[in-house]
Image 1: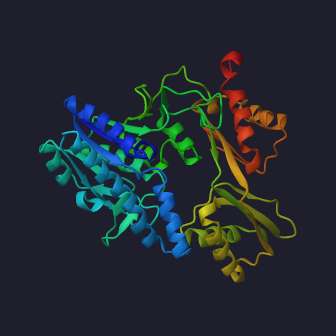
Image 2: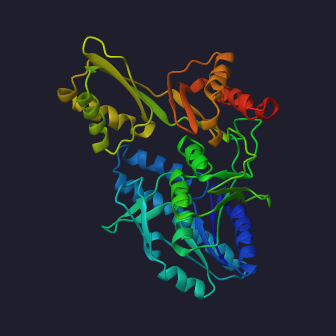
Amino acid sequence: MLIVQKYGGTSVGNSERIMNAAKKIINTYENGNSVVVVLSAQGDTTDELIKKAKEVNPKASKREMDMLLATGEQQSAALMAMAINSLGYPAISLNAQQIGIHSSSNHSNARIKSIRKTRINAELEKKNIVLITGFQGINKFGDITTLGRGGSDTTAVALSAFLGADLCEIYTDVDGVFTADPRIVKNAKKLDEISYNEMLELASLGAKVLHNSSVEFAKKHKVEVIVRSTFSDNAGTLVKEGVSMEKLFISGVAIDRSVAKITVFSVEDNARSIFNIFSILAKKNIAVDITLQSVGKDGMKDISFTVSREELEDALVALKESNDLLKFSDIVYNDKIAKLSVVGAGMAQNSGIASKMFEALYEIGVDIQLIVTSEIRLTVLIDEDDVERAANNVHDKFICTCEEDNF
């Protein structure tokens, strides 16, 4: 079998953990498998590199940031090769350029377009364990790009798809996918399996267990993914196309603190005004999520929407520079908010989901600023200070009582 494994930053956070992961890799290899391993940067390395960059240039270009941040994964891959070699097994570390991971040119948030198999297959034929830097690619200009935080997951899933791997294992510091972050929600339960669609929603809404692009890739190429702990032998969670019908109506509760809300006041009440606002943001590659417009009055209306906090400043600058076109009266922002979401395939068939969530928030006095829904998710925007207690109450209302209520 060909098995692709990915080890996250916590899994390789120090020399002891590197050796622990090395033994897991060797055990897979000893069982007669060909093994390709994707490595994340150790522990807080990426954050430390970002800090160093800000000390030198707080407004460094995304290209140079990619050049810097990619070194973290290269360090992990080389150290893992040394660890496996020290235990008497053949291993080689390779970066994105050496194996040909070709990506788009969008620095800091690139997409994998193709992967050459020649070098990897040649190393596997030599019976080497192949260790690959995650989180990065090479664009058409030969420049290093990065895939966004958590992008090593995407590297692993993409490799599984392009290589036709028999199994893709994502090793992390938790036992699998939970109904909520167990570090925040005390009654979170581990799921045995979850569908691609539900996992994609949870990942895009703030669940940290898998990078959202990795789930998109898995769904598109039908790569079944197992999420499991580096520090135990538990079965983990299988991410796949279909799941058993005995599952909960709600698969998970997600928190996203990385958002900010912008409100543009008094723009003309017509479709062109909305187009102009979002066209300006799109040209800056700024993604917009939740959107709300007020009822038009006296030919004017207000537009509120969310962006990531990382892109807040860029969004404000772009809009203010375009006020000759937009003609708004004022623009304000709030970066002390968070998204709280419930996700589940059963939501489409159950009309009580919204009322139950709003009841849970009302019980603890949490106000809602914005609401957005789809067939399998309900998201509210609330104050960041309220989000953890809100998540616990909403989770308990759904996950801990739904079976008893036959919900």
